Image 1: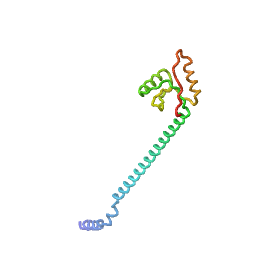
Image 2 (image 1 turned 90 degrees about the horizontal axis):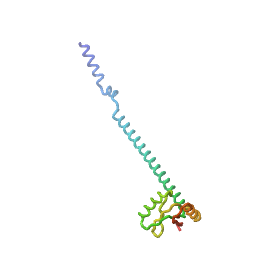
Image 3 (image 1 turned 120 degrees about the horizontal axis):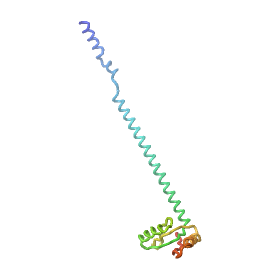
Length: 156
């Protein structure tokens, strides 16, 4: 019994020192803090990359819209002779007539604004006056009673 007691005391003194326990002590608190910080940095970088990509996409979309608008303006500048089928002072009347004209079979009638405030319903736009006049003749060729139309030059 005495041997066991001495052995126990020896072991207790040997293993009870600070150095013994420091060997088994882990720096998990510091490691988890470092890992957490690295994770936060990674998340922040991912968010910044996502924001950059979104900004690039927004800029590309804006550029595409501007390019489309420029092409439309160029086309409208080229096709400045409109075949007009009706002219209205009241905008709602022009809108209603535009719908009726579409039902008559005209493709994509649009409303053109004149400098004097009238809203005109156009059934076609052309590069030259002669092409617009030819279109009026083509439309009325098969009609028993011709439709009254005229050519309007936009952007004068």
